[in-house]
Length: 161
Image (cartoon, rainbow, N blue to C red; front, side, top):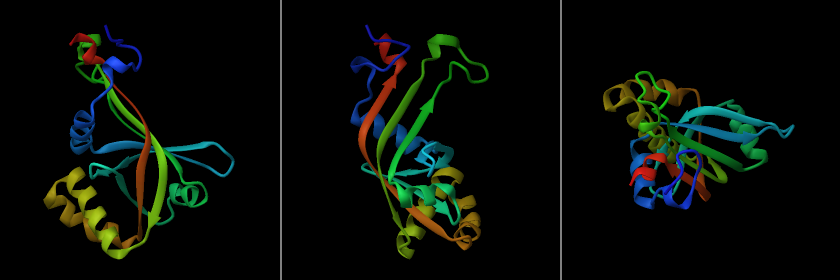
């Protein structure tokens, strides 16, 4: 029997389950290291291409300064309906996808447009993404690509399978 309180081999997500959830997900939490060693953690929209996370960050974001100095990063995508409004308690389960890796930064114009539009379409839908793309692009962007090196995943509903 799998646990509903911790990650185990029995409740780990398969590659297909990871891809499906990342394709549907919009919001992640990104962690990078500040110069003083403390974590900088923020919510962020993302794109998943099946192998890499791709993020579009505006000029001046603290994450960019941190990642230029230290490329180590963690990213978390999760859902816990047990505590959402109208929650069903423990029966609702929870799932999470966490990975660690190294980030690379790019200011390639074509990649910036491709990733920024993909992230905006995923988060806002095609119509609103089109309206929002130019103002977002005008602030200056950098693409952060994260290649996962280490995964930790779980789905507490797998305990019932």
